[in-house]
Image (cartoon, rainbow, N blue to C red; front, side, top):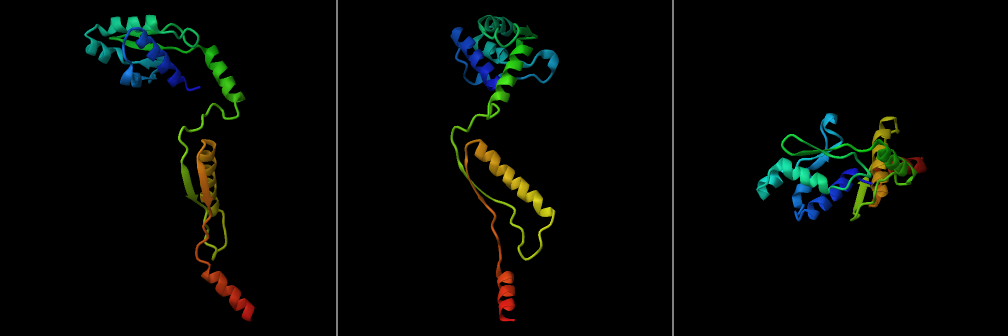
Length: 177
């Protein structure tokens, strides 16, 4: 579960119950920058109050009254000119973490619209011996491939072997001599 998306959905329901169209205001629900203000905060009461011609702090109070998040957070508090601060319950977070750990995907959902990626990686120079420096591009390329596949994308991975001229020349020379 995405906590931010869950909170946005709950705030959207609260706003709709007050006959307010949430629209772009949900973008102002975000993780708090400072823990003393809670875990998440909603900062849309000020611009919304201005638009509706209402006192932002009173509007924030109405939103908090309509907000149904008792199962996941303590009662939200209105601070300052109309900030809404939310503190998540430790027990709820623990439950979410346990559920994510039991999930094979660790709570990461596949992408809605998979794309095709072509990743060319490693590609050591075949005319020279391999060494430890080749590991970096191999590991990075393989990690990208695995991550994109895990997210649901179609991945074509390639280890393009460049110029074979020297190798074939050596084979022909060895065959003739």
